[in-house]
Amino acid sequence: MASLGARDIATIRGLGETAVAVRRHETIRREGQLVDGVWLMLHGWVASSMLLPAGQRQIVKVHIAGDMLGTPSMALERAADTLTALTDGWIARVPLARLRALFDDAPRVAALLLMAVQLERVALMDAVAAIGKTSARERLANFLVDLHQRLSQVGLTQGASFDMPLTQEQIGDALGLTAVHVNRTIRALEREGLIARRGQTITLGDLPMLERLSPLPRRTPWFDPDWLPAGIGGPASDDGAAVEPAPTRAARA
Amino acid sequence: MASLGARDIATIRGLGETAVAVRRHETIRREGQLVDGVWLMLHGWVASSMLLPAGQRQIVKVHIAGDMLGTPSMALERAADTLTALTDGWIARVPLARLRALFDDAPRVAALLLMAVQLERVALMDAVAAIGKTSARERLANFLVDLHQRLSQVGLTQGASFDMPLTQEQIGDALGLTAVHVNRTIRALEREGLIARRGQTITLGDLPMLERLSPLPRRTPWFDPDWLPAGIGGPASDDGAAVEPAPTRAARA
DNA sequence: CGATGCGTTGAAGAAAATCAAGTGAGGTGG
DNA sequence: CCACCTCACTTGATTTTCTTCAACGCATCG
Image (cartoon, rainbow over all chains, first blue to last red):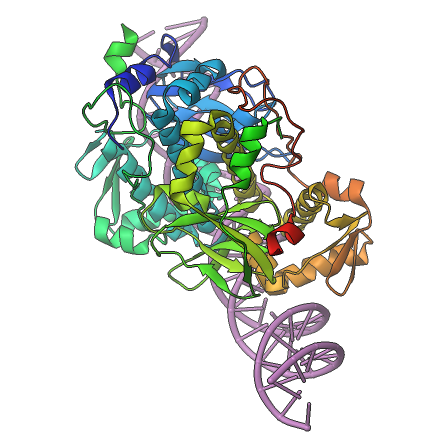
């Protein structure tokens, strides 16, 4: 996202505790629990969801490798959202206390953290607009294009194809639709050749058309170099994502 | 939200440029425009909205006195949302460059800024859940209870009553409903005695019942005092809100 | 005093939800 | 190794919620 000093990079590397494996369906943290930290996602898929009184579940964000988990609740005593593993994966906990070091010792990293959070906020604004004002068809197209873009940034796509481990019910929970309606909509897109499926693998057959169907623009992060506090520790190479992407092997070790 | 040192407070006071008046319907900043700053809201109501290709408008957040405007777009080159004054009001611009000073000079304020942003993110998560999974009735109840709570924090309620300058069309744009349906839903709540209206003033006639109807919990900010970076400039009094609430007269001067 | 904006209400229509039933793949245990 | 079970997907029929279209009342304001 932006260049970092060598010491900044060391700071980021030191944030996470040792990586932990999670299994599909496992709850990482339930809403209402006391907040005691955040997590880095190293590998796998995780849903951030909220449970409503009538029993419905809304998935508020689908997390992939490289994301930070659970940070929205860091200003609350009790977590607002539940984190559930959608697939097997690896995560690393970051105690809240360690984030403090960023503000005192690595102001540039702290500023970048703020930026990353603002980008998440924009993503949520997009979600509100999509769910509030668009048809199931548009919403699904947007969802797939967005996922494809995010996955490609961390090297998890094969051309126009990618692995999509969500069940149709989970897709519905993310898009504010029922599983039945998700199914009908998917099948319609498939019938028209816009997408294709084989097992869990989904292929965007006509990306330009899907993008035209999708009601929201792709957002590109952008930072004014002058604006940010200077890095610490001298110049170093760029980092591809907010959090180091997919360092699975290293984390396992 | 949290205690600040005297110098921290001075830093916050110095953020905004001189206050500017805005008139109802005035566009403060249109989506797509180059991002050159954020704003503090001193007085009035402002909507943050997004325009969709088919022409629909989704209001993503209704801002009141004490809020920061336009910050989600600070990590983008071009603004994601449009800021429109819903009433006459006063705002103060904050050049992005000045926020930099926070990270270098006032780490505690910077950390609190991050917290405030995370709280906004939780509010958006709540909005996603409400729009995605609840009925018009529940959504409206939640909207009114939430507004009442926020307004009461900055002293803009009179008991269970408050001024609600949004048109029903704007309420619909915020809740993902049509104006017609908002009207029917309002009238139903009114018929049942849950709310009452006189002009722009709305009264929550049965707050407990509305809260029971509302699908989302009230969130209370919470910061671990140990966690935050220490304040600068010695102890000082508490501040009621993230940004100094309703300093209307001072700002006008 | 006639626009114009906002609220209100009725009637008809559409999108999505609900209810129901059946298929098939994969995993497990007998 | 096969029977069975569960989970996910699929499809049809029906119902509900919300939208769309239309018309009208009322207040405000230039």
